[in-house]
Length: 205
Image (tube, rainbow, N blue to C red; front, side, top):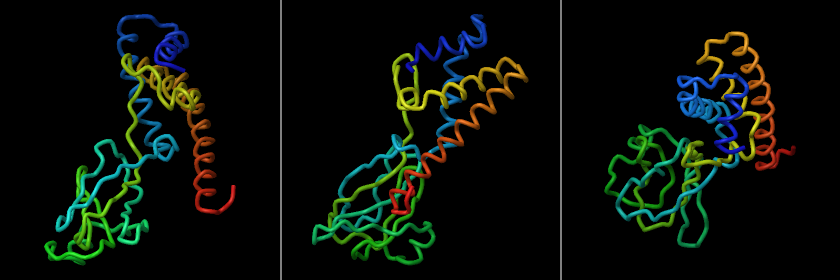
């Protein structure tokens, strides 16, 4: 389902081509997408990586600008082995390695803020690193007419949009109907994602 098709489906469902409703539809779609991102953040298409090189003597690296959740952080050591750092809170990092000018092989990481990840010990070399994270996808719009949600999760996206449209129109009966449809479809999707992650960690389907 592309952007134009979704726009038309929303208008057809509610039989409303009034200027106020039509002009609000792009905002409804954005709110509907944001709900899905929050309810099912671990969808496989949202998983990605970013790479870079640590700076010797610098205890931080940049968090990817499009990241919603950082899943893991690893670096490649001198033996070409990928080493995964253990996640901690920032206060632990500062207490564990209070002198950031001292260097050694990194063991832990924490998110300082939306733009910075702190590492301890402070890197003693320019290790290549990989950030594994869940990205914030670009939503549907007139300039971005197709997305993973529209291509692969059409029902969830449609029902979420219908729910938002019903709320905007203050149609309580339809709100209840589409809320239930959305929650039912989302529950199925959450189970599917759960099976994917179970298989990933060797727990079976």
